[in-house]
Image 1: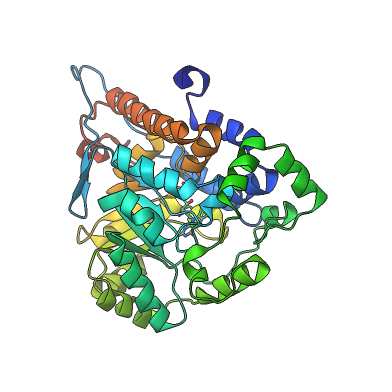
Image 2: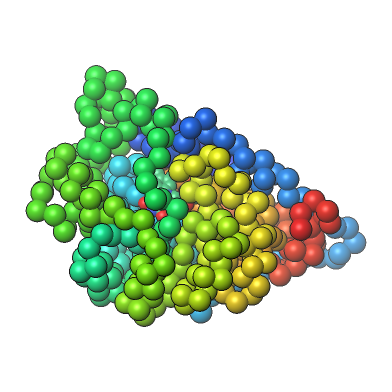
Length: 383
Ligand SMILES: Cc1cc2nc3c(=O)[nH]c(=O)nc-3n(C[C@H](O)[C@H](O)[C@H](O)COP(=O)(O)O)c2cc1C
């Protein structure tokens, strides 16, 4: 099957993933919170960024390579951290880490992944970005950081936009819960997803391995309750300062949307700022994530890199965020749609789709390199 013919866009991968995943797993991946205004606002803000088409520019071969935090990458996009990815697709963490290594992309692994840092760190090598959810106990935090470091993760990403649980009504309706509650509907949708079910039977029930290793509960509801408690904490300034003192590699803060937060964070010594609204999963009453990007970029004023994620669905969207000042762009849901659609081959295919889409669109606007993108924005549409 030539996937470029049958599944040329992310929307095709999402549609196939939906057919292959149990309903609760798809809803966990796909949904926003509330009325899901966050999702539509993210989409609208991306669509509003327009470029000037170019003519008479001669032949162009767009170069997508970029450097960030001292590493060069062939393309300016990577994999955002996704909690309990192993629920979305069996063994997702290992498959993503392998793909990241193969494709030379950063792979973000969540604190609440279904694999621990020791399992995937050696696979992903120097492309590992470990995501940290603030933990209550400083001793646990220090031990976690030591284990993350010892298993080879290069970058630490601390997520600050989850001060509490969001309602996520769509997930409630779909019986998304940890551990899963086996209603007749849930059982029926598992039975209707044989590839997922077989993989799960082989791999075993996904657990929050890393926080869970700090509790003595081993399985079932207790495991999730206790593992959840380990990571309940809304960080303050002192927390970020402690992390800075305890982590000697690059430290990235994810979930920044207010330019007023930039100076304090840079004073604390963080190495990069990641603009995101968690793809509308936490709060739908704020700005579209892309609308928050230019003010944050202005406040940063070139002192550290700025990253972007939320709502990116194709190469043109990546160009939009780069043109507005992001140095690197991450996608979350997209990689897991691709994985659920076609396994590891799907990840490679999505990488191809995003790359080809960037090349095609950069050619249309006469941009030979990422640095050319801001100059091709239509004045007045943005910035
Ligand atoms: C199912 C799911 C789980 C997520 N879990 C985490 C997490 O554990 N930690 C985190 O920092 N972000 C988490 N995120 C947010 C992503 O890192 C990222 O910000 C977001 O998915 C990007 O938007 P996109 O999915 O529209 O590309 C999660 C997102 C999804 C879809």
